[in-house]
Amino acid sequence: MQLRLGIPKEARSLPPPPLLTFPSVWMAGIFWLGALLDNGLNRRPILRAGIHRQVLMTTLGFCLGYYVKRYSNYYYAERDRELFSYIKHHPEDFVEKEPRKVGEILDDFTPIR
Image (cartoon, rainbow, N blue to C red; front, side, top):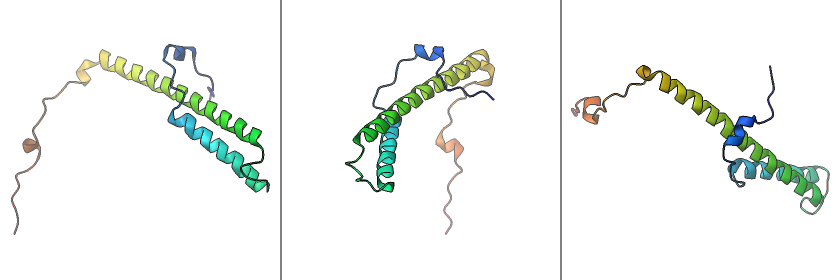
């Protein structure tokens, strides 16, 4: 089993995600809450102690979230490329059917009293 932590060079062709995405903000918040929890468990003032640690943990969480977003963009782009190439090479498996009306799908309604 190979553990791939780096983003491949093919991912450089993708546009970079914006800085403020859900994963980056979420991870920054989680890491900041972790620093606050550490202060609380060690009986230090929760918000005032270790500001440098809080900033460091928030920055690490933000960077990790940004990296996760970049990797997920690459993963889904690669998966879409493979799926679309399969659809392109096998059009007989993906024939479009004529749309049916709702009346053809549902049975006739007869009220029971």
